[in-house]
Length: 219
Image (cartoon, rainbow, N blue to C red):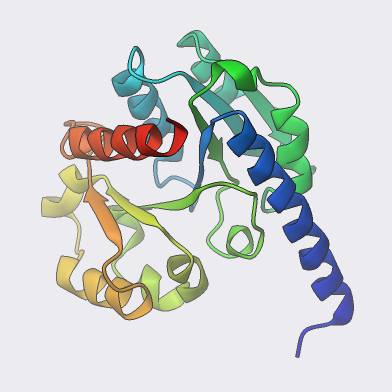
């Protein structure tokens, strides 16, 4: 049974998430919430996405982190893309309030695609709607093939799964079929992209799919 105060927090969060979504829609911005465990390669995938879509889409980024260090936001800014860093103050996830604050600092009229990088965690982010169009999880080969079985909540709420670091598959005990079975039990037919940010494997498929989805939504 849920504690009533938790229900109130989530209800308030959901209301503000709806406002975030309405704001982004009014500005014709397609938004994605990228989640992952620490070290799965969120920032690497985001940088590859920006690199591949520059000139095709106008992009903005919100970076969530548990500290005030702006390493990831600085990398994005260096690519000529507007980015803001949100310090969660130690919280293990972003919420709709934090995202609303970040949106106020970005030029939404000049953005087609808003990428939100959530805090590295496979538990808390699944519970907090941010108001994005889709939820994306970046899993990685080194994490192991049992993550769908251990963290079912985050896999159930996904629209897209990116399996990163495929270049390490020959060197790590990872059973793709076992991993896929776990994913399919929780989220049948989930759109999945096996990729490597090192070799570039699968990145173009992800970029083409994302560009098509953005243009379908914002036109």
